[in-house]
Amino acid sequence: MRCRRHGATRADVVMLVILVLGVVWLFLFMLLPAYQRKRWHDNRLLCGRNLAGIGKAIAVYANDYDGGLPITGGPGTAWGPGLRDWKAHSRAEAFGLDPNGIGGAATVSASLYLLVKYAGMSPESFVCRWDKGAAMFRPGKYGVGTEKLSAFWDFGPDPARHCSYAYHLPYGPYRVTTSSEGNMVVAADRNPWIDGPREKAREFSLFQPDLLSSNGTTEQALQGNARSHNCDGQNVLYLDGHVQFAKRAFCGLEDDNVYTSWDGRDRVRGVPPKPYESQPAHEHDSLLVNDPPLER
Image (cartoon, rainbow, N blue to C red; front, side):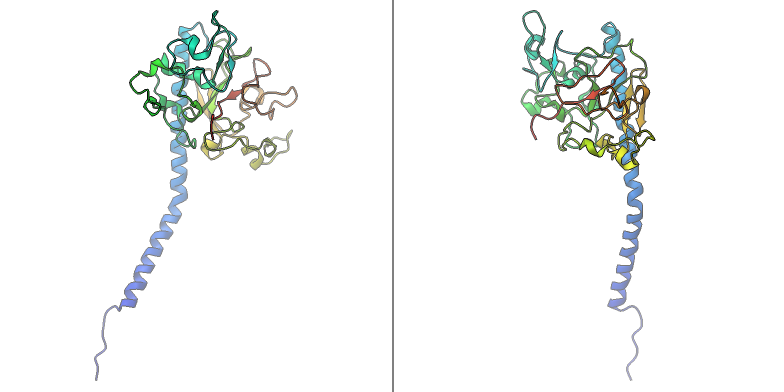
């Protein structure tokens, strides 16, 4: 007569391992959304701190330059696709100014770079971790690593890849100064209607504000937000220095959409900017723009 074997068989062990692994994976699956939300929240806070630092540097700069916010080039300088030479030895050479120091072209980021050049900000403060394709400006990547950051005039030859933030268009008749209203928006996350380093501009027809006057849905309203924070909203810097995470892009004066220009009818939706062409409609129209990448 054979004795019955007691204890676990190999099949029992395999089933136990499968059961344990299943419980572990289920636990991780349940935790993943919470972990992802925490990451989004943490990066949102870090991005907000970047903009708060930019706001403080702008205030210092304005105090030194008669209330003017950072603007580079010279009188008559226009928004253009690049500088003549971002590492030039003189301002005239960098922006292609005429003998009287007038004209030429500059990127939007070149005005923000003044905060690196003259206010000692780190290029790291101009990059949002969730801005796809953006990376900290490192001159060594372009073969000029021996010079100090103050020697340059922009975030490299393709600055869109090293600056995640949109800035109120500084070139033109409606630039912001410290005498402007304190709740004017001066900077925010990258404009969704302009190409980014890895993403094309969003289709404007998909955007409709979710206000009674506009009759849009929540999903349509979110299409107008920056991509950097899962389209939940954007960090916004106001002239008075405070930073707010705005859940909608129409967060400027009188519900002005900060990513579009006012077309004379609809301030909440507006019209999307055209790089190198668009201008704010008037002094209360925030138009936050950034440079598109030179290459895709």
